[in-house]
Image 1 (cartoon, rainbow, N blue to C red):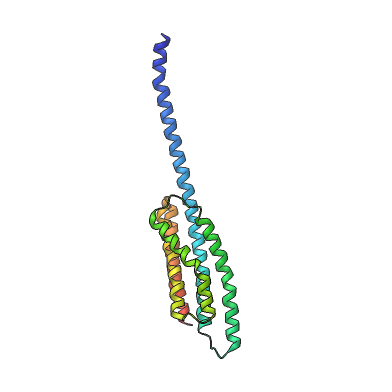
Image 2: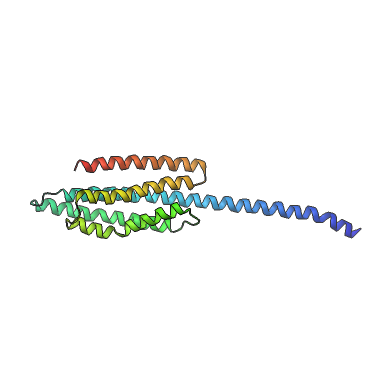
Length: 193
């Protein structure tokens, strides 16, 4: 009788184990997806801050390059302003790099875009030197900054697609669309200089 009772109890016990394990795996997946969405939202926000700072740096670079070379006071003032805004970019870039390093299991397109952004930010010091020394013209300067800013906007859009949470993704897409519109207005701002 005990052997029959043992056999009868094995089936419900195994079923309980299978259902419990399945529930646990689902909860772990849900927690992992929530953490990924959280990190993507933070990276997207940091990309937005870096984009904002780069837009300011681009505008001051264009103002510096458009300075009257015979007006030393103007050149000095604009050089100082250009140098000052760089610290904001550097801090935003540091924050962006730190947060984006926490991302794992990314699609190739996201990883490639991050690599492009890292490559572009790594040459910012050379770009800044060329701007400060007059070795880079207004059009090339604008194009250099605009390409990096465009990649950051693209990253924000791609982050929204990967977020996994529909409400969060919708909000991130709306913010990315605002970023694109802000970039358009920022480009209009530098055309006036």
